[in-house]
Image 1 (tube, helix red, strand yellow):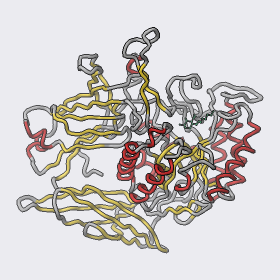
Image 2: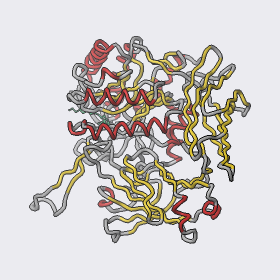
Image 3: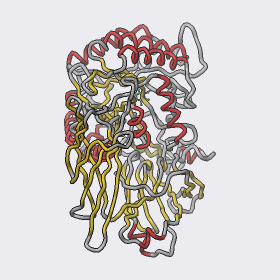
Image 4: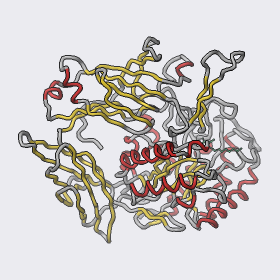
Length: 587
Ligand code: E9O
């Protein structure tokens, strides 16, 4: 949560130092971007370890002079572990690659107002058994095979472990006394909307707070004062998903005005939070938004593109939203880590429903179920819920993807993790995505919705599409029979190299991908009348992976290429999603 943004954004060229001693090559490096694909150097593409970013900025002199101004440095995300210095003084340290962190740097820049502000950010992308995602390092000590000091990073997920400063680095200011955080819970009764809010203030023990809720046209619809309260909205416009209503993604604006005094000076701060009024509930067979059944017909995504890697890129973001709408998709999962806040804000505005996933992907090694891993996972959920709790588009938290959920410690691990997430946010269901066996999955008892990934005729029975109807039906019946909870097919798909064709279809051709999808769809159609509440294709677009014998320059399960051009399967899905949307009808 931040107050007024004063400067920042745009592409910034930073200097990147590559070696421990700081004597390695110094490169120009754009931020935001992964550093891996920017140069022609394969060592930098596959680099594991520390890199240093550095740049000088000139901050406005009134920021330096005015002790009543709080100057904040915010890093949108840096992968994976970061240490930040300003003018050589350490101001922040953060573990985790997909969530923001900040430092109050006012004290440091005031020490010597004559020098420019030098920002240094060291980033290390090494993954360990207790990082999220986890990884291990293998040292290759056989000198007859490998050079001295040779090691490899092992990861238990397939997307490329892009590294660097992936989201904007901003400087902004607030007054010394400021709005630190806002939490809203929304509800409605008949035509009255309810916004229960809580505001936390920092920098003073008390402050006057005025809260105003404005509709889309800027008309005030409710007011309140004080750090908590309930705003009542007559003739409420609810927040509805895309394709469910003529006016999806309706947002009010909740303006919090703070005034405070420390005896000598007065402080004023203002923060405007977009608020969508909606409810989410889960029954044993349905997912309800505003008490109406919602069927997820959507995609799984990645933050991934040519050259930029995982770097935030506005043209790409807007293109992806246009493609999502073209497809008639109403939802996506942030596989397998939190996406940029800019994306979440767009989901709110466009009514795109989100399953918000933390970076708990590839928890496969039993040592990653220990106390240190769990403690870190809990704190990542603190950060994720803290960042995304007010987005109406977020309807469910996913705490992990495809963990080894059949291992004995998974029981305690997931019961603790899910309980903690529900404590942080009692208003949303919680899940994790499983690919384990229904009878042995130790985490499934704790989830609200069963989310299953399966790849029949791909990783299992490759080339045999005829098994799909039988195996998929069995999958659904087993999970529902045991748990009596609604089910989302959270991944399914097949690789297709664009331009490869064969009839009869063969693996890796566009026809094969199309036919796999269609076989799944016929079972979804049967089961969605009962308890299947969603289908998310793997994947929206092709994406880069580590090199390996199962990947031809990346994972090709996209229905769009990495450059966002449609494969044949995209047209199948488009036809289906619009049919599903039209069948339910708008409210
Ligand atoms: C996770 C996703 O990140 N699910 C994978 C996707 C894939 O295409 C990946 O990109 O590989 C599938 C899970 C694979 C299960 C493998 C089972 C192998 C049995 C022989």
